[in-house]
Length: 237
Image 1 (cartoon, rainbow, N blue to C red):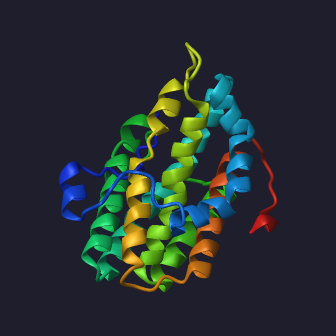
Image 2 (spheres, rainbow, N blue to C red; image 1 turned 90 degrees about the horizontal axis):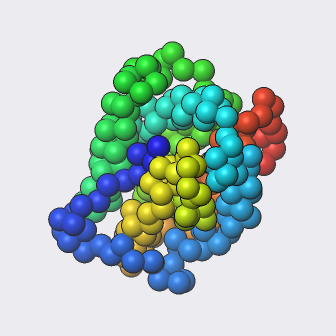
């Protein structure tokens, strides 16, 4: 299953806001944040969960459990990005956040049919997932909306990077759709290019941005790592 949380940007949206889906400039904040977290990305790639997807040996029960736990994050994220969009005053930023909200909304409608869950209330998420959702909500409620965009980029770019690292999947790999479905950088690149243009007219505290991004990346890693483990250490945060 592909990362259906991924933002969907149609051509009209890209034209309206003069956005590019090409890689952002080499010295941009997008790459500064990613470069600071390359070790976390490598750690995520080498988790038993992702390697099990890579070679097709991941227990389907574990995969299912991960997705149900992840639903908790997604149900919360739907409201988070609506809240962030309502706070935003920049039209382009508001449009991005609404697009993200709609991507969660669309994805969350699939849970009743696929996983037989209708909302977050009946889900017992992993500790990492619960803390990630709480962290994202805190960023949205306490900080300027531009940082809500920043906290979403790790999900957008890391999953695409992981899919790209595992491409092409072996013939017959049960998880081939996950691998090929995630191998798409356009949404993340559009966000990076938007950030680059936004900084020309507005102030983004890069130290705060890198800290937010790093924590979100760490939670992404912990979500993958703990999917195959019963205990974990949160001291990474």
